[in-house]
Image (tube, rainbow, N blue to C red):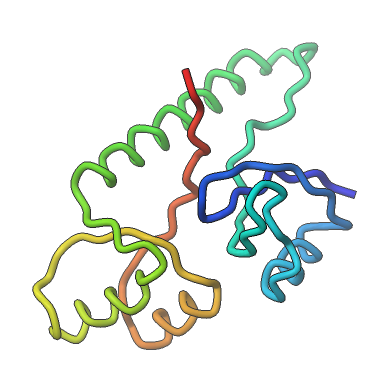
Length: 138
């Protein structure tokens, strides 16, 4: 069994147990994983800090590396949110329009299902998937 932090498209983070990574992927594709807060079934694995034992010699370096990676992802999220248009769950539709020169080219971000992402790839639409870190209140 493996415990994952899972995040929904509304940025709610919750924990869920799975037999293995493949079980998570199958359940996610079937829409069988629902946010425990809002019921949303558009979920993905949240970025998790590695479970590092403090007894190991490399642990301090590994913890620092993980912290730096998280810091980088927070900065990336901030940059994207400040410089790109949020299109929500219409990402696939808008990306396709931009790719086909139906609308003015612009930088966008939003959500897409695994199926929509696969279709965009098949159509040759260039995009990236970023594992957004959960928002935390300070």
